[in-house]
Image 1 (cartoon, rainbow, N blue to C red):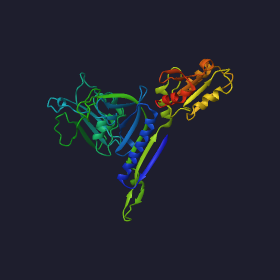
Image 2 (image 1 turned 45 degrees about the vertical axis):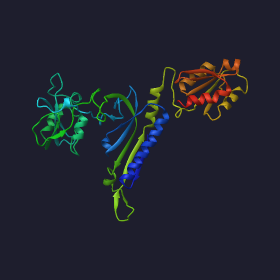
Image 3 (image 1 turned 30 degrees about the horizontal axis):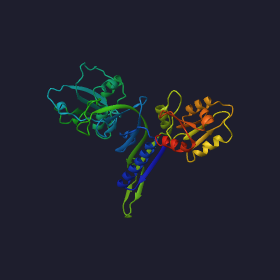
Image 4 (image 1 turned 45 degrees about the horizontal axis):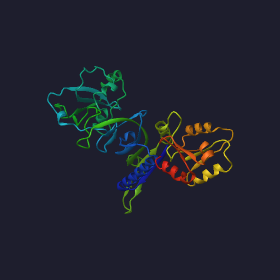
Amino acid sequence: MKDLYTFDSNPSAALETYEAVRSAYTAIFDALKLPYLVADADSGNMGGKLSHEYHFVSPKGEDNVWSCNTCTYIANEELVTKRVLEDDSTTDEAYPLVFTGISTDRTTAINIYVPDHSPTPASPDPTWDSIAHSVNLHAVKRALPPGIDLDTGIEASTLQSLLSSTTQSITIVDAQLDIDDDTAVQASDLTPTLPGHACPKCETGKLDVAKAIEVAHTFHLGTRYSDPLGAIVSMPDGKTREAVQMGCHGIGVSRLIGAIASLLSDSKGLNWPRVMAPYEAAILVAPQIEEGGAERVYDALDGVDAVLDDREGKSLGWKLRDADLIGYPVVVVMGRSWKEKGVVEVQCRRLDVKKDVGLDELKSEVSGLLEQL
């Protein structure tokens, strides 16, 4: 894990630092030349009100990232919202589903009222996994007062035994329902977001969801930790003292390597982006190439980070398979074409390139391929 902690003396400077870190992360991921998503994220237990996640879209991912097919809206599972259309507005006929949960500190019963759009009756003792098909539990958590959090991992039998000992209750009501309870907390929308729902940011877009692998996260923490720890700094006026504004940022280096390997590998081996590869190009020398030939090819690639594979006792086929396994972005082969015509074969699996190139054009050809990788 690559961790970075930032400390600023005031909120505006802290936000500038946060954006500077985000710009640096964007430059890092842009350099990989792979599609990625930056999603608005929930800070969760880290605290703070501003955070972003960086994801590679992959069917092997464990996270759900939602995006609009028209505008730039992107959010993770915890923060995604949808635009409630007029057809979904409050009606007296809307019949509620009612679920009761409990806070993580076991002191508060939490009653949840949502519209019943299910064609089948709800189970009398549903699990939280089944409740999630009818309720956006993340929206419920956002609607709760500060300091109260819904426990979504508790078993139904345990829940029933604990509810009798709670000292207070809170009712959260979806705005589509007409519930006569002045003490209830009104939430604009507690129903789950589904693919095809209207984007909350633009007028025409529809939401879609994709599996993704989270590889980095940025958090603006504010005074979440500096206040309780007494991390105080004197202001320039010399009179006032304020809690330090903090930020916490990280890139999962090992996770990043695994995610990229998963995304780009094929049946032959790995395929590293140029900025991550051990070398930009590998020069593979067949047996019985004349002395000095390999050095001429290597010198022709001046400025390219190349490795010369002139290992003795290994066939050209063996070297080709080994280069594929390692995942060099570009492979330069000194084989039959070199012996017969004095040209090399340039290969790039990711771009499906395989062509003969003379020494005069070799550097420009390889550089052109690398610019795409």
